[in-house]
Length: 436
Image (tube, rainbow, N blue to C red; front, side, top):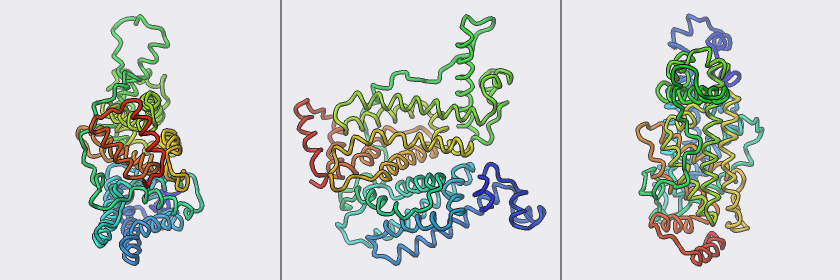
């Protein structure tokens, strides 16, 4: 199963291919596994056991303050030397449905426990990263998954870049605020949201519509996209069918096939549509603010509010984005990394001697995506606005340092808006060394 899924992808892998690789008969396969999903979950479990054993041994062999270095080095060594296994564990696991996602999330939680156990042995007052270990490991796994998809041959260059990124969040344990993903009281919803690109198409009335052919076609297209998002939220990508989409959209199959050739294309269009929405909302809020830290805050505020208002689209982006095949997966990854454009201005505020690396910017974007994924997967009402201060700290600390990032967030949570003179003074302060 590992060899087959690594070569063809989980969605395209078949039991016939698996038994051919294994050299067993179909009846023998069914003696052990009920179906492909059952076999894949078992394979993931075995890979998790191997990786966790390697990580636990590596962390125990080092001083407890070196736990992160040992853990990241283990992940990179696994991705570099066990390519097929890493491809399945890091990439295909997030494309194979709820059961595989459970296995993936449980494995990351176990990795986090290994690091937490080591940190319990660290002397009081020692600085450790003030972010959830599970969240940072999830973001790191997403970053490594993208490198595997891009066929990066060597992972060794990433080690120091990722360790530098993780170290930028270090503070003594008594000052930690962001290690648990508990929503905090944040500012009011963003005024920048407006009605950008919301999918709110209504069914056309009986008779000949008083609209142009182009307008009718766009109405049909948006109804199909909205129906697809809602069905995927309820049933998942695999269980969503063209028949179900047509029924939910109130359209017949002929209309569907005039708009889209198949289900996969609809999901690709849905991701593109949502990305345009999110980029428009985020960029609008970002460029309407003044200084860069304020821009990050306002952009995050608009993004979180938009996601909360469109939970079906958020589910499609965070949960189902990897289920539609390699072309869509690659495009989604490009879209995630597109958000690093909002971080580029931070280089003007960072110490020249220790600017965050390009890999650090990608890790920030991947980890914020992991935060949205976790919130969406937990079910219930999204509380992304309450987590916006966590995401702001994640974005600012590598540039400003943890102390100044927290100082800025405290100001925002206290709703103390500086005057323009104060803003200029703040700009001079934020431009100085991040360690001050």
